[in-house]
Image (cartoon, rainbow, N blue to C red; front, side, top):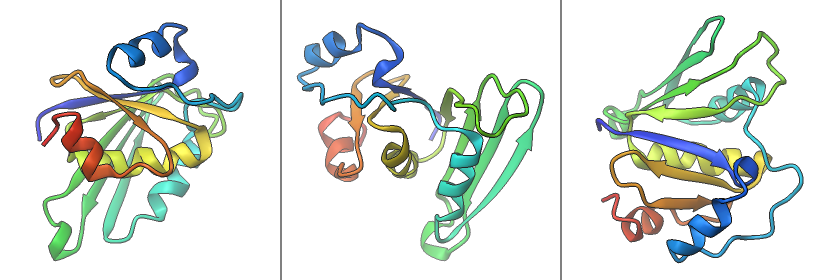
Length: 149
């Protein structure tokens, strides 16, 4: 899939609630801990994905993380995660996005991160319709309702 996807915590911009309302999405209660994940948290979440191999390229400006399906039923499934602002501290929250990849895998990773970081927005650069990601999201339903499939 040739699209990019941006993820942001609801606390990233004071206008997010209004933007979500314009798309018919009610803003949930936002926990004070709502934030981007750390590299350590990304590593922990990705290590829990069964049937995927994960590789990391860590540089001075950020990290590129490739998640590639290894099972026959996931052979063409992948995600490429880009982070920004990495200082070498794996416990500092990092803005991240997905560069290409499969929307359902990207959303599954984001769903797992929302357990730690609080609600996150998932937005395709080509579709532009936000999906509010929480631990209880129905991924296939959310993708269909937002027009991603």
